[in-house]
Image 1: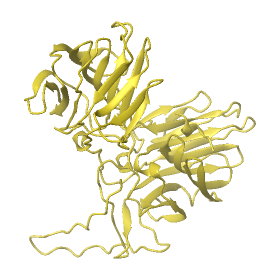
Image 2 (image 1 turned 180 degrees about the horizontal axis):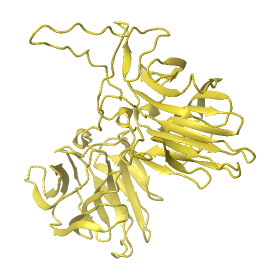
Image 3 (image 1 turned 90 degrees about the vertical axis):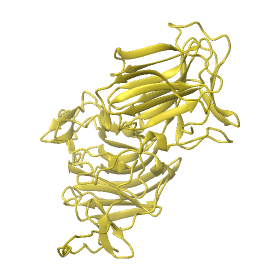
Image 4 (image 1 turned 45 degrees about the vertical axis):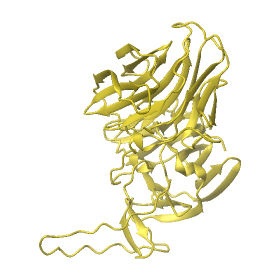
Amino acid sequence: MQRLADQGAGAAWLALLATTCLSACPPPLPAARCGGDAKCPAGSRCDDELGVCVAWNARCGTVGAFVDDFDDGVPSTDWAFCNDTDNAPILHQDGAMAIAFDASGQGSGGSVCRSFLAAALQDEMIWVEVPSATDTAAASEAFFEVGTDGDLISIYQRDSQLNFEIWSGNDQLSSAIPYDPQAHRWWALREQEGRVSFETSTDGRSWISHADLPTPAVAARATLALGAWSNDLGRAPGTVVFDNLNAGHAPVGFCAAHGLQDPLTGPELHAEWQVTEGDGCQASSTDQGLELSTPLASDFVCALATASGYSLEDSEVLVEIPEGGQVGTIIGITIWSPHGTILGLWFYDGQVGGWIVEENDGPVTYSFDGGSADLRWLRVREAADLITFEGRVGATDAWSALGSSSVAVDFERVVVRLVLMHDADAIDPPAQPARALFRNYNLP
């Protein structure tokens, strides 16, 4: 099934934490029992051996990073970007996110908010309150899903049914129950031990599982989407309301950027990398390194990006570019944040340079150029709100500072891209098909 949202690793659980008191400990509260049909409240999971509810393991890089009570407006740019339409605008309504369909019932379409970054559902749970879904008599739908590129894990209300569905390639697994707005006010996806449980709750604490399906591969790196659509030209679908996304979830951040290490050599690309831009852009992993290439063109961007989000806070990104830069091309690293800030460090027309842009398509707030063309390693570091750009010639050489600048935004949520670019307005076209070689990503 195609819906509006289509546009556009797991780890073992830690042991229970022990509490040590200097004096006598107060008696512990009794743990909620679970197992079978008895589900745990939001923010906890069932320990199968003990048969009691325990806190979720707050590890980095999971969908637990997506938290929003919507009290300060529409979805926070910390996690989401939204596409809405005139007949279904996204509104801030009574401390919640509302998608308000045209009351006349004329027109079709809908709106969606999707996470800027991908995260793992594996060994995690994600939930949202749905105080209002669409008119059950209208040909419309409200949906809550994780996935990417058509591979989806989804709960959606359509007509008078609440549907639970997994799409993986051309394969579909699905189940449905009659929709009850009160009994099904909260929706949740829970993944554990290779299975996804589709759950609902009346209060966001006691959960009931309605379907249990095998975990698809997309659960390792998935974006989150909340949205609604309609193709009913004769009836107004009403207003869909979402609230309390992951409310009460233990704080979870994205993993440090330097934690992803990849020699960028071998027969296949690491699953973390994906081609994100460029007609004809090709990426291949060879014994010499990762090769990006593109045919001749007046303008092009060829980019390979991390599929998941990372944090650059007190972290760094480095890579070796063994052949340096070609005249007529830009080869290097860009780091993007949901707030619109972009960091860039690259070989540019035979030299080394970089910049900071603090808003998408905005002015350059800091730049430098003229670094030695003999450099073969590039590094971007963040510490105490200072971004430092560095380079070195060989793997055993000391790093040389190329430039630095303070920034007013955080970099706790970023995507890293390895890029090969040509800007016809700035430099002469390359004399041969463009090619860039990268290796030793975060491997000093």
